Amino acid sequence: MKELAIVDEKIFEVENLAFTYPKNKVEALRDVSFSVRKGEVFGILGPSGAGKSTTQKILIRLLKDYRGHVRYRGKDLRAYNDSFYEDIGVGFELPVHFSKLTAVENMDFFKRLYQRHIDYDALLARVGLAEDKERLVGELSKGMKVRLNFVRALLNDPQVLFLDEPTNGLDPANARIIKDLVQEFKEKGGTVILSTHLMNDVEELCDRVAFITQGVIREISTPRELKIRHGKREVRVEYHENNCTNEKTFPLDKIGENPEFLDILKNRSVETIHSGETSLDEIFIKVTGEEISHE
Amino acid sequence: MNSLMVLLQAEFKRLAKYNIIQVSLGVTVLWLAVLFLIGQNEAGAFIPLFIFMDVSLMTMLLIGAGLFYERQENTLKTLMVTPASTAGIIASKIVSAVYIALQSTILIALAGHFFFDATINFFALIPLVVLVAISHAVIGYLVAMYVKDFTSMLAMLMLYMFVFAFPSIFYAIDMIGGVWETLLIVSPSHAAMILIDFSFGAEETMTLVVVGVVYLSLLSILLMRFFVYPKYIETAIKE
Image (cartoon, rainbow over all chains, first blue to last red; front, side, top):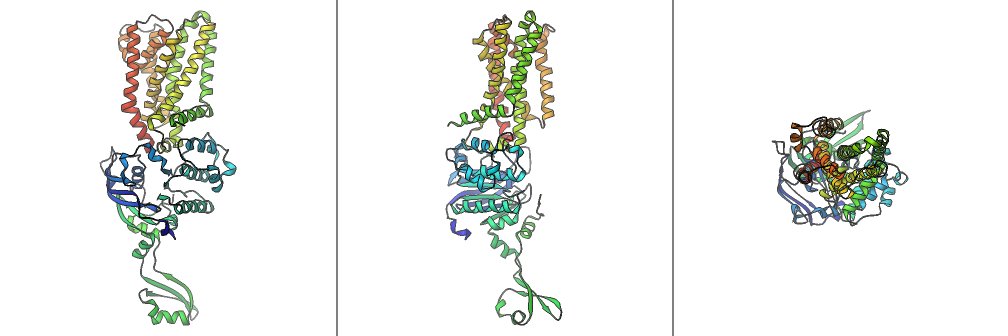
């Protein structure tokens, strides 16, 4: 169960966060408030330019001229120095390695910048890079670089993991491995802040999600609650009768007492039954008002 | 291990892997070949000039090219989310640029000393070359971070050479003089030339040498504090 590992300790508390880029007049973030609990996978979702990256850049201390309050483990984020990075791992979307060094040389360099680190060999093997670890990063495929980014993010055995599109560009098998590793990280008490367009990842991984658009958080909830709230409370049944397929929709309330529904179940040949539950893709479009980019 | 030491070791490893040390050595060998072609009588006059070009212009080019490599590889941003300080990251790159400059300087100066009877004050040359290399590494950073692509950077470096370096070179070989001497005071290249010439026994007044040292030191500190450091952070975040 996803919820079991979450405890009430707040890792990040964000209150009335606002940010304007120096050369822009429009605020990139406006009055953003949310909190991330320990052991939770928190998704930040939204179309390109909505403010996801800006939020993440503030939380990882890259942008500092923000307004409002951000607390990490109860302490003002601005009060932390560079040792803050001992605690967090950041997996960027684009490859972030020295192309003329091998995968191992890259990992070895980054590892030595931290006081605490993991056995990256085992992790490289887990993500399927064991045989390619002595190759120059420039020679690796895009998918391999994405997996190397993930290993890089976990190098310092972080408490909090920031992931930006961690499975983008991966085949289903490798995406599965990354998602399993995220789950394992969470089960060990780690907190994940995930930014992605891939609603399948959100559904599988996120305990809660925040939809952000035009710099404003429109909705924060669990994927399940969102689906219930935005879905239709109905059941659609397709059944075979008189050599043709019929379709009938029933309200979900007191469905077990609906004689017509029960009659179809008992006496007809049912082909499919669908609940009116909506998909996160549809919720994304509804909440943000924009189509999902699958680039 | 101290993160600055880790950054420095990594910089040197990358200098070798990206063939920058090898290219720099190759350029030094070219300078030496030219000196031998020029012959003993004229070579002495060209040694300070070659060192000036290597320490100032090559340093700018190497720092700029290195930064562009890193921008392409998105490694600026990933370093910013490690416990290494931004100042340490920038410093490690400047130290590696100074190393390259010193490597060339020492090879050319030793050749000058042993083969061309050049008069060299090594105790002055080394610290002054370090200062010239640091100041030009900072200028190289500045140029590389304010342009959008590699071609623009090369164009800006060419512009810098035409505005600052060439007039100093022309002045050094007596092609220009008079009013230019006053104008050249504001040129970092001219200050660099004065300091390097001084190490080779040129009759520079001590006042000019002190002014050159103070000017390049202040220029480096001010550019670093108000332009390079904040722009580096901005560039890394934009990646």
